[in-house]
Length: 259
Image (cartoon, rainbow, N blue to C red):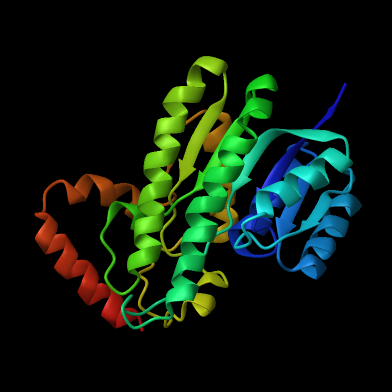
């Protein structure tokens, strides 16, 4: 019988690392991918030391157009296939889209949208065969327009829409599909994005450990969406009561304060 593994992208830091720990603690054999192979190796040894089988480490930059092929080839070489896929990798940059580097912003689309879509579709047949699960990491940003981080917010809107549609398509095949929509989480994301600290409220702020635990439970329970923290759960509901123009202006003001 072919060994089954859970593939987690962006596993070298933040929510991705914590998701790896949670899945491993629940008996999953892992395949971890990210750009920073040194960090992946440290994590892999940590998880193996706790009694599990050492994760497969795949060094890969999801901005590369052939990233999906590299990952698929690495898994095939190990003789494994997926029963769970966690598309966690993603990044954003702060600042007006018309002023930020265009290539860098296209990179956001490559990672947050193209790679996530590629892997979701590429491994769908394995998820169906193994009656597994798909967890895509969106963001509360996906419910909002995002002046000041326009491409990032738009990419997460795509993730939410795409994941919900796949949920409907994969449900008849017995595959669980969940979108995770966290708010501000203290990780390396903020530093890479160029977002200043101190302006994210405690109401919206949940630790990466708690986010990962809630995400795992939500996927196993086949929840449509997981919104960690009370403040985040309120956001989609509250948005129904305000005109889109008001939301746009409010988001713009909030983003200006974060820099």
